[in-house]
Picture 1 (cartoon, one colour):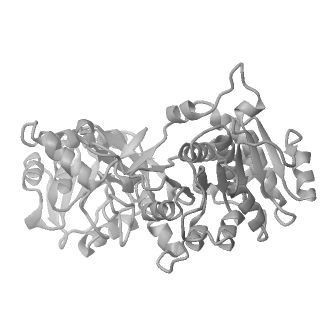
Picture 2 (picture 1 turned 120 degrees about the vertical axis):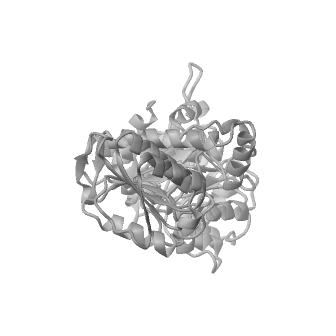
Picture 3 (picture 1 turned 180 degrees about the horizontal axis):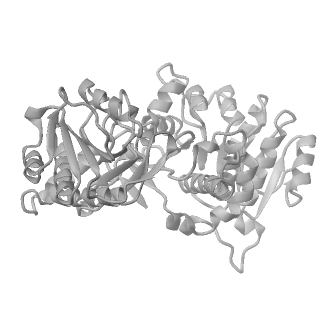
Length: 497
């Protein structure tokens, strides 16, 4: 399981570790890892502006620019720059506040032979790599004007140099992933000690680029529950249900699925296909006659009509007149996933903005627009939810008293009253396509029927859903992803990666 910790947790851990180390040792561990990543990048392929690709192929003679703010983040960048100078790179550092620059790091760079300029006198010259050492995990708000001006020049360069952020891109919030002003657009972010939540949560995650981790020995000193955790392939494999010699369809789980309508018949087909590939023993489908016929034509394995089930999915494409079906599912003593039109029906049932009146496992899977309607609060608009995703998913889980999967640019899953939120790290923007959510609902519902806790069912489903999309794009580069591709790719996504 990959974990991310808050700024306060990192600060306390660093203090505890530094008390056991010689002065400056912890910073030099970070600097060594940062330098090694820069050497690797300079020695390989670099990406320029407009997607162009070139090759530096060496550290000797490479042109490196350091943008250094005050504090330890700037010190990390300056020390790394000094090491690069000693390897033959041509390094210039631009200081945003000369009086507050990290004294020892600046002295090391000057002693090595690096050039130093102040922001007021500096003008961009061609560079191969830029180190963003403006501000670290303690930063709040967007880039200040001097830093924003420097990075505007860097972004406008042609070719644009490779930008490497030190610990996290400057201008993003380390704890929340919020971005409230100009921020660095990094190609690579080298983070130290532990991951920070903002590295995984949009909109900040969109500024991170490729993420590299440097272990500086912090893990034993990190106290308390992490802010975020993410399933890795081994975790997914361990959670996935697998049949045994004693299995039958009921022991493997039967999912009841109320989906689709004459207006949205495809939602029923997509959710059913995903459910069948979840590992569940059977899918029992309840819909209108013409929808039933379409589902059976595509999946003759499906059971039609009432009968024994172990969980329910209700909502994908069922249309506005769905309150009765949602109420019937919620009245059972079974796990229930509510999605799409089913979420709209909650308001009709008087369940908006208050805990659901049930003690059995429940999973809601809204996107930001549906989440705003559920919260029914002027402060929680769709745009506000997109900008404050971590706070939003916690608010939803606590208000409704159940597990919530918040879909979008970053998929987050929260249980009520729980400190740690799950984040999904697979996927692609191409998942923003019609029917993608129906596939996710069917997949997560099947995992609920197989016995997984809603948090695990949602997390595994999101991981497989995203992995399926990545697999499709890898096999068919340049092809437009459609939801039906995901259904076909889920079998491969379930295989160990």
